[in-house]
Length: 352
Ligand code: SF4
Image 1 (cartoon, rainbow, N blue to C red):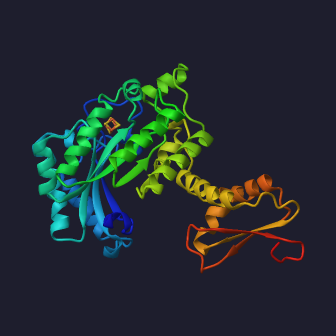
Image 2 (tube, rainbow, N blue to C red; image 1 turned 120 degrees about the horizontal axis):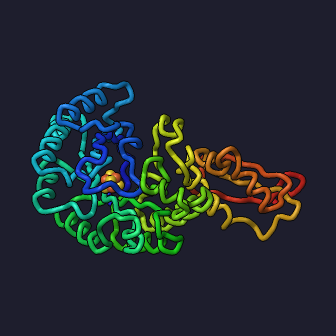
Image 3 (tube, helix red, strand yellow; image 1 turned 90 degrees about the vertical axis):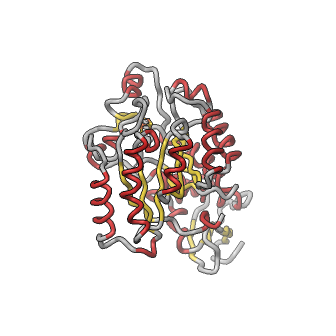
C-alpha cells in the first residue's frame, strides 16, 4: 500500500522489441512502437542507455528513478541472456542512482529459476501483459495462454514478494464491453499493485491489419474506448488500485507514416479518460435543473484542465447537458484536488 501512495516513478525504459516472445501476437509491432527497429538489446546497450539517462538534464534522483525492461517477453529470454541484462541494470541500482528495476513479461513465461533471478537482481515489480481474462478473447487474439495461467502467474509472483502490474487491452478480437468489464472485475480480484490500459490499435503490418482490411475485425471508436477505459479506471481506482497509464505512447514517425491504420488513437487519450472521470463527479452534483440560471463549478486550481476538457469540450458538453446560459469555473485552493463543488447562480451573480 505504501508504494501505491508514493510519487509516480521516473521510468527509464530499456526496450527489447519482441525478444523472448514465443510468437508474434496478432496486434503487435513492438519494433515500431518502441522506435527501436530490430535492434537487439545487449548488456552494453543497457549500460549506455542508463549512463546517458543518468547524465541527462531532466534526470533527478528525487523523482524516484527506476529502469524497466519493456517491449518483449523478458522472462522468455534464455536464462543466461536474461541474467546478463539484469546484471547490467542492477549495477545502476546497487551503486545508484536508480532505485529499482521492473520488467514486463507474459503470464506463461515464468518459472522458479527466472523468478529467483529477478529477485536476485533487484527487480521489484513484474508487469504482466494479461490483455484479457476472457478465454474466448485470448483464443481469438492468439495469445497462447488462458486466464488460469494469469492466476498462476500472479500467485507465483506474490510468493516471491514481487509487486504485480497488469496490462490490459480493451477491444481485442472477440472482446465486447461486457467481456472487458468482466476482465476488469476478474483483475480486481487479483488485487494488482498497478494497472495499465492500452486500447487495441490496428498497426500496419500486423495480422490484425489484414483482418481489419478483410472486415473480420472492427476496432473500437474513440468514444467507445474512452467510455470503456473511464469505467475501468473508476472500478480500479475506487478499490485504490492505481491506473498508471492509459493509452499507447506511439513515436511520431509511426503516426506520420500512417503506421496506425485504425482504432482509438488520440494524442491525449489518457487525458480524455481523466477528464471524463472528473465530469462524472460533476454530473453527480448537478442540480435537477438550473433552468435559465448560471452554473458555477468550483475546483482546486489543478483540476481546471479536467473541467475544461480537451479543447474546451468538457465545458461545451456541460453547457449542452444543463442548458445553462452561463458557466463559470472558479478556482479555490481550499478544495481538495478531485473534489469539485457545484453552485447555481441567479441573474444577480449570487448563489441561487
Ligand atoms: S508477447 Fe508482447 S511483445 Fe511479444 S509479440 Fe506478443 S504482444 Fe508483442
